[in-house]
Image (tube, rainbow, N blue to C red):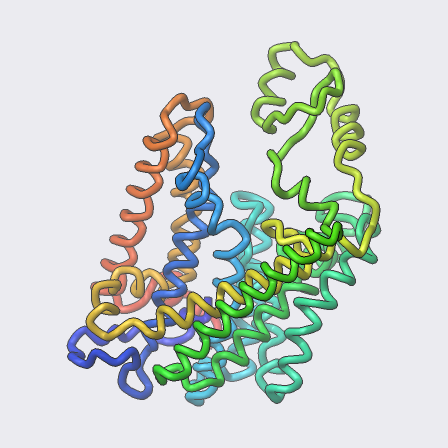
Length: 416
């Protein structure tokens, strides 16, 4: 998201095959990685509504970005901010960062309340407000913040589980509920996600133009994924596994009136309610749903790697994947990076791209596919790919003709 701080400068004329670019220019590998994160989030946010469930490699491709793309996006925001601060850019001035933090916070809250309940912008706003302090920390102190978020953060959530009200619920005053949602019980609880941001700042202090550094990032990320996977496999073989895995691996809703344990989606539940086939009230459904999925606060649930579970297993694996992806994109030779110019362009105007993707995955998807679509899975994937291609094209044209995104330009003018 901090790509919006400096004007994009895509170096189209370089002939070097090295993964780095001229000093002071944008690091294309970071923009490419951010473009990957944006398309990954777009894939996740498009809900496949057809009657046919994807299987095999198709299902894997659709599910792979879930819980990974947003983490990559968050890590890269810390990386970009760290790089910009290292250049001594006026965009990293504490007063500028705080003003942009307030604007993003308010914009995100507005989106969450009106058009996009999954908005991550308000969380970026809080990180921008904290950025002047985080940027002053040493690598060791940043490592402590990262460890707190990714290891102790899930433990804090475990202790507080069910004890804090979500936004708009619990009869709590508006400011308190917003703080609770941002830090504890929202989609991206910052008590955990601050760790991803701090990790990004640490990475941004490395020599990211060095092929050696890029290779080390790739190796470190892959080793991290392997260690988490091997560790959890060993614990599972020993009979120690997270009781949450059942919840995060299954369908989003599990309920049947006769209690046979069959799985139905939220859409199917609404259809059955509207048709009169189910007679229980929404409150009765919620009580049964909570009972069916009731999980005692058990330290073993910290092992979960479920998407957005905000548990230690997931934070370590998702952050390792983010580091590996950054390593790969930084290692790409200059000639290959030029092939990915549209992806880098999209990543360089991340705020504009993020705002643009919302109507794509809401109104656009509903208009083309429909809520009750019988379109095949392959057909829906084709629509998704076409939408992503359109977003890439729009991003490339914006950078080519305007130099920077309109949202970035407006934010820059408002926060001077």
